[in-house]
Amino acid sequence: MVLVRILWPHGSQQASVTGSFVSWEQHYVMFPLENSPGSFQLFLDLPYRFLIDGVCRYDEMLPYVADDYGMINNLLVTLEENTMPLTLQDDPQMVRSTDVRTALYAGSPSSTIPDTLAAELLDVFIQYSRCWVSTILSNNTVYDMLPVSSKVVLFDAQLSVKQGFQIMYELGLPVVPIWDPFRTTVGGMLTASDFIYILRELQEDALIQSNEDLDKCTISDWKQFKFQQRNPVGSLAMQSPVIHASHSDSLKDVVVKIVQNQISSIPVFDPSSGDASSIPILTLASLPEILKYISERCQDPMRILPLLEQPISRIPIGTWLPGTGGRSDGHVVAFLKFDEPVTSAFQIFLQAKISSIPVVDCHGSLIDVFSRSDILTLTKGDVSAHAQLDQLTMDQALQLVYHNSGPRPSWTCYCSSTLREVIEQLSNLVVRRLVIVDPISKQLRGIISLRDVLMILL
Image (cartoon, rainbow, N blue to C red; front, side, top):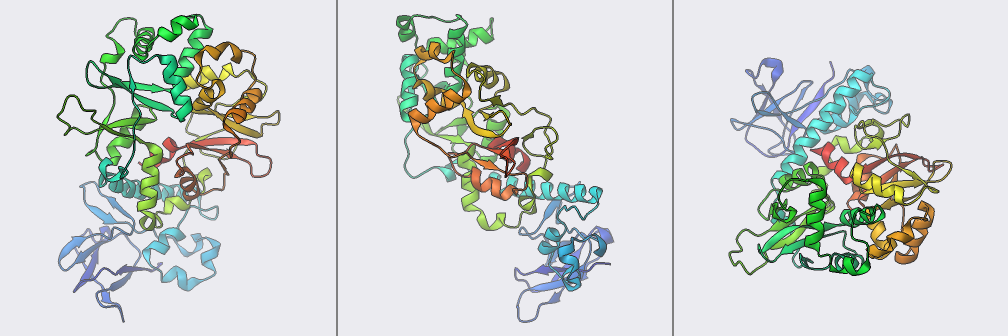
């Protein structure tokens, strides 16, 4: 039997432990820890629950899961001595006398552990991490994340759509809420995807073609046209309620709304605003801001999440090319070669509903990532420049983007990168996804987005 040290360091008069190994009916008395008043310890090798001063409790700083009856218990993972990683086998005392947090890390999925056991451990890590992250997001609201001072740009629905896109390019805005003056509320969002949609329609001669007509086309006209293209029979698009959040909503609710609706951000309303003439929108909530918030505010607790120490190639996260070692989510990695026409990206953006496409050279090595907002940069927000795009290759398009906005770093990671390292990079507000590449050849392996990270954690 492998003995594992169970520690209660949070102060009490007396402490004991119970668990499934005694059907939760018997309690093992814990012994006071010398030179540490209020701390108790016991050596066991099974799941357990603390009984502190007569009250059943669990240690939030250690792994815990809910059972079939909704009871939350600490979870202890123990391994036979011959299944421990070699780094721990060198020290038998560490195997037999360690606290539960070290034991959980010691049981990390490894090539030295049988596949079935490694899979079980990974499931435990995922469940525990999800429980912790879900609790953190549920206990924090959008209001907690609001900056002390900020500004929100809104477009009047009667603004020329051509002007709207030019303003988005000049201010570097990928999405802008649309203010409906007749309903005195936010009636929708103008996004980089709308810009791509218009360019495609212009190329297919499905939309107004003269610059004069384009100047007269309002944002409201465009949204109505787009809605009728997708729904031949139905109400006007601007009459549909926009997906939004309240400042009192939990961050978990906001993440779920963004992920389920496959959108980049949602407006946050202040329902207490009773004046019909006032604008109730407070800010735009997005996945980068939420991930940055929990990363900065919860650094210490996040250090004990064992899932974050796992290489991404062992976690079911992201989209991978076949045969590259990652655990694919079943989707296909969309990428383009450097000599393909830039218009090929339009269809991929709109059909696959993705925000970026890796561009590779003739050897499959990463050159850069082409995003939806790059098309705004490429044309400087001018929809009438669609004719100039027909002859451009992806490589030429990237060179124009660099010319218009300057050079930029390529945000990448490796198969061996841990989930913690990925989250640290994605906590940068300018980073929306990481391309997985070979560390030497830079050949494309896959891609991990913010959405992927939050889905695995929730």
